[in-house]
Amino acid sequence: MPRSLHSRLLIVAGVVLAAFIGIAGFVLDHGFRQSASASAQERLKGQIFMLLGLADLDQPNRPLGADALPDPALSLPESGHYLQIYNGQGDVIWRSRSMLGLGIQWPGERPAGNFVFEEAVSSTEERLLCLSYLVQWEGRGKSKLANFTLQACEGRGAYNAQVRNFQRSMWLWLGGLAAFLLLIQTLILRWGLGPLRQVATELRAIESGDQTGISGEYPRELRALTRNLNALLAARDSHLLRYRNALGDLAHSLKTPLAVIRSTLESNPAAASVASLLREPVEQLDATIKYQLQRAATAGRSTLAPPLEVAPVLERIVNSLRKVYHARTLTIAGRVDEHVKFYGDQGDLMEIIGNLADNACKWARSEVLIEIAAVINSKFRRQPLRITVQDDGPGLPHDKAEMVMQRGARLDESVEGQGIGLAMVREIVEVGYNGELALRSHATGMVAEVLLRFD
Image (cartoon, rainbow, N blue to C red):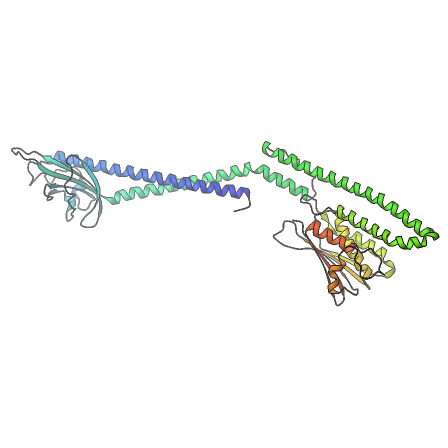
């Protein structure tokens, strides 16, 4: 079934119209055949009455003169119009000149005074429409009634030609009418579904960031939809803002006491032994707070989120990393395809790229490369995004890849960090964007690859 509502309605309307036209054509054809058949019967009945009026059945051997028939077609051989008279034994006692060399089988005994209409086949295999009428004649000076059958026939070719002409004309007009009605239905559907297309256009404009809500005037049936969509957009933005403000307040309220505890332990020589015991729990608590706050703040993909240009974000991260690691003279480069879009929260994108790139800089010997590209796939309305971060460091054992993505896991305690960066990235990628994070080592370093999906 087609996905387009317009196509579905048009197909259904076309099927219904075709069925209606077909049924109408069948009914009209059947009615015309009956009318043509009745018309043929009336013509043949008129010929029988004419024959009955002209024939003198008191003289069975010569009931009618050769030139007595007014219709010239009855005197023309094989003209398609035939008359004949049978006696009670089925013998032909008279026939029109048009039946020269032609024979028609006797219809048999029939009730007197009744017309019998039927099809017959002549001796030359011509198909005929025949009307027979049995007369009981009381001749002069005779006490016994004599039976005579008067039969009038005409070739079926004229009837068939009449039916064919009607059918050709009928289907031509019905076909033209069907095409006209289908065009009218198409225009009506297009006009009727116009507001839905306008809603879709406004939603695409919201997705592209050109507008922030639905502003058009719509019919009564769609007003509830547009109002609810605008309310949903407003509630989303308001909720996200309140949520982030609450998280910022929570981070501030938790970090301040931790900072006080840490500074107190480090500045008080008498508490050196206590400081050595509490330093690690305090750092773990600080890392846990950062991780859980980031996990809760992950915005994830949004159907109506405006697209974000990736190139400026990548440039900002690369410049920050160059400043942080300027003492090591690392070559940090970023590559991104033109007009690549990210459909989600900017903070999520910065956390993913920033954590992976920072981790690569910690282990790299001389070079870090960040590449971002769209994955072209016709199945998706919004193309997925692939982020690749490479470094020329010592790499990672294959069996340790899963372990280092767990929260708090660290392979080398001498390297600065709390072991939550990769776990944070994994959480954002898998939960927020239905994506994948993979770590691979090769001969010249390590590659971290992220796939983000937005549909």
